[in-house]
Length: 55
Image (spheres, rainbow, N blue to C red):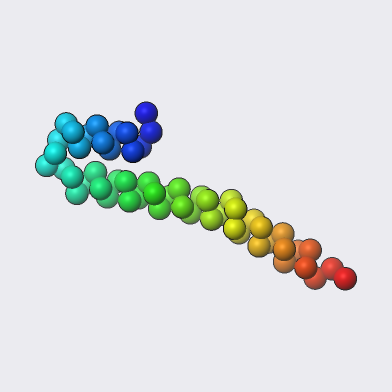
């Protein structure tokens, strides 16, 4: 079960904790976004900078 499923299940069990569940989802999405940026964008930029100065 992933984080989104866990949060949905928790919300269904405890509807009063919607703000807490929402914050967990926001944090999880931010972590996933940072991992994506680090893996795909920063790695490609470093490779371009390394090979771009060779003539």
